Image 1 (cartoon, rainbow, N blue to C red):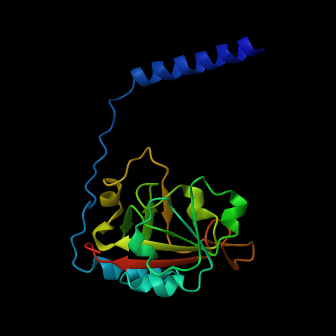
Image 2 (image 1 turned 120 degrees about the vertical axis):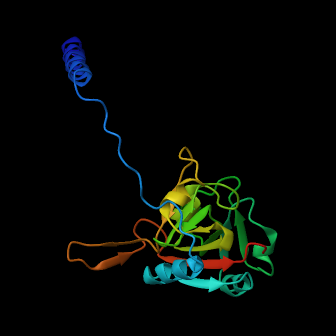
Length: 205
């Protein structure tokens, strides 16, 4: 039975190869879409998109102590910058060894950075690089505080892709996690954090 299945598969693939060999040459697809957006208001555009997605946006590194003051249990990547945690007096849980799903679920918030942010779509992308940690770290806790440097903001998706390694475990965030039930009622926090807060800081901070 297995032999017959393999033989049938081989025969189908052989027919496909023959048909393709006799066909016309591959079509060259034009790719004349915009790849770079050099507008001066990219950060403002990103803020507008994020707020439209119901994310909360803060400007400046000095916003972090205020945000963290009400967080009792905070999860962070092992390489989170020390100045992001300045003055934090709660329970700090570094993800080393990796926190269990149950432990992550018990966190009040997680604090990470990102790889790049796309102004046109309001999308923040994490690639498990510096200050980001693994995917579970940002998907399980109910609240995600994400620091975005202005130098990480690009205009368009094609520009963002040039900064990413396609082999890396990418997490794409466009606002808090949300979906709709069969009656189109919005339900938040099903596939990730229910609350997303973005802290925009200058490139030199």
